[in-house]
Image (cartoon, rainbow over all chains, first blue to last red; front, side, top):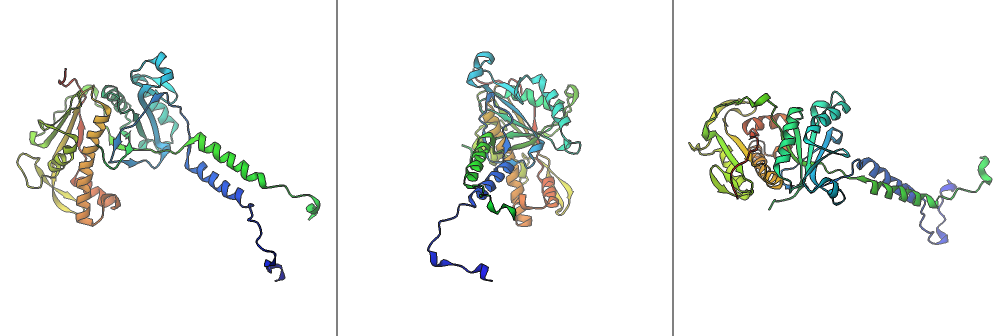
Length: 157
Length: 192
């Protein structure tokens, strides 16, 4: 038992920093689990609109993204200022959507395919014309479950 | 232990290394905020074979948005703020108003036979409508149905709709179906 005897007659010892790495590693692992790698760099400017009736997607692996918006400043010269579609890291046209959906579908497990969701990240200043074209393509590709990405607010003005 | 004579590896820098990794991950990754309005698109039909389902006019709640983002609800100018209440009144039809949708007797689990509305919300927009406006309108329509479901869940089960179990949710869904039909946008007249 003498092993455990405290010798407190020496005054306050300095605070041990030995556990600091462990704490930081804990933080690190937390972030590694929670976050996702930034897999696409956005080439279009997307500011999603506000909404109140939001539903959250739990399984992120089921989501494929379609970005629509004005090209960012460095692409203006080559791609103009009209809203464009971005799929993964490439510019795309409306006709490319069905191929994109098929590729995305192939990448998933067979069991997961019916639950796939297509998230439309569309800039709020976009005209509906291009969105409607995309929706028609999605219907043709039978990707019917969609999500209009939006920011959660308490009330839309 | 043979390692008694070896000096201990200094662990002081371990924290710095871990911090560096941590900062790398903070920068290189993103918290994914995947939320938005969830909708289901209708099945694609070849060449739009005009399925005139002969819906009675009183059963259709017509919402039009033109290129100037003006809203026309049931042939009246309206605003997004008023839309939710109008849609709720339409779907619920509490006083059996003959101008609002008819109801039919239907066997619903848990609730028994209930009067279920036959109302359909029809949303049509112009190709030049702003997406922001479109989402605002969608949001109000989805919100109206969510509100009605919530009220019903509160009355019947004493808890909000998303706290109900699947069976209860299905029953409520049958009473207040989310029937928002969207026509292909066309060039609705309006503006210059």
